[in-house]
Image 1: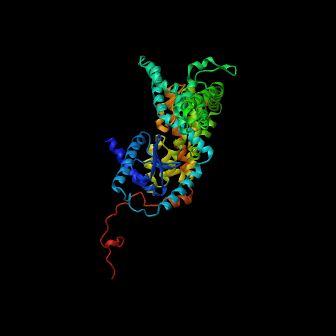
Image 2: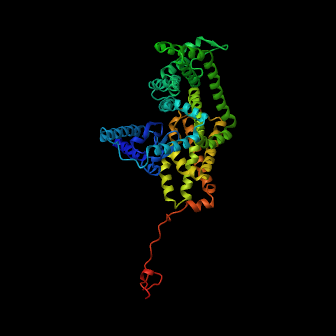
Image 3: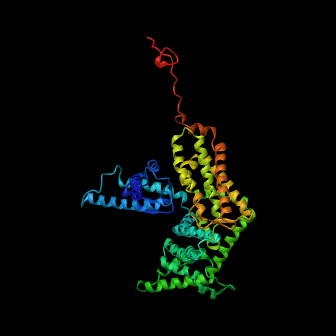
Length: 511
């Protein structure tokens, strides 16, 4: 039954994005179905957002349909299968020498011009070199998130069992399961880096593997002995990126007959030596600085730092700059087992939820907007904020700002407790909102950690609601937006005397 439901969702989406012939490629991330379109003008946005299961849409380098975690991984293969089935059926129906379909309403050149214009307009907003670089770096780490989540939850469960003294024979097994991936995460980062930047993935992984090899402890660089894992994911990223450029350089002069022998050998050798005698040390210093800065930021300026981080995260998301935080989160998890920044940044989602609830109450006659809020709120509580951002607060303007106020208040609350010595974080990146509870890890016990995080969410909800309810609308906005039938049904009419002139239906007509 579940497969039928996901196939039905995919079948409902496909015609609304222009059908199989309008699809160039299909991928997915944690929450979104990402489609590369040939002609953006064929997409029916309003109808698409009305499909059950669709939580919203996002414009970026691809057209992104928000379906939520878990669901997107099941809908995507069904969608891909339907695209292929549609193309196969079209080829079979066309037959040799016949047209592949009905004559288009406009010429191919006109469609191409429309699609190119829309694509360029969209890319101009987010296609700066810096943002494109951040997006590519994010593409290195995003595929690792499912493993980070799974291992993070297992690590949390293992810590709980160890603290309670339960199942002592199982604790070492769970520790091995939870820690195995993290001990080799540098290899995966190297593999993904080479793949993303156009190199050979396994060579990127091979170079990055040098960082976690125990034998590096025998080397002394800049007067200090190297440590296995020194530099972590940042070192792996730099080493694999260097390997990509060395590999491409080799292919500009190595004869084709010798390429299979010379290119990988030189790539691994040159990049490996640079990693051992420079990149590991430099990346190790950078990683240590990131960890010290994060700890110092929250331990000394906790409340203020939390206010700034929680308040600015939504604008960072809108600008695409939040992607720069992914390697920082991963570095902190690698160093201490959790990232202290994520619970604070998650408060931005709480402010967004509170703002959306306030909009719901301030616009009682706007049935369409209230319906959007009701459908998007469950996802918002679970930390999926795109439907509320793009469907509610951002288009309205002021409620987006007041949502940031809610995030700042929640961030200040969590930051304050960090300043008071109750430090905690998330063992993985990706989830937010209520979905972050199973990933919480701290120094003051699970109960205290959960209570503080829940308190931060509550503060974010209340502050976002209050700021939006009282300051999120001008009088003109209320006049323009609060339109539609009165949500309160009229009181039933009381019986009147047939001759009562107050009852027009029963008053004799004058002739």
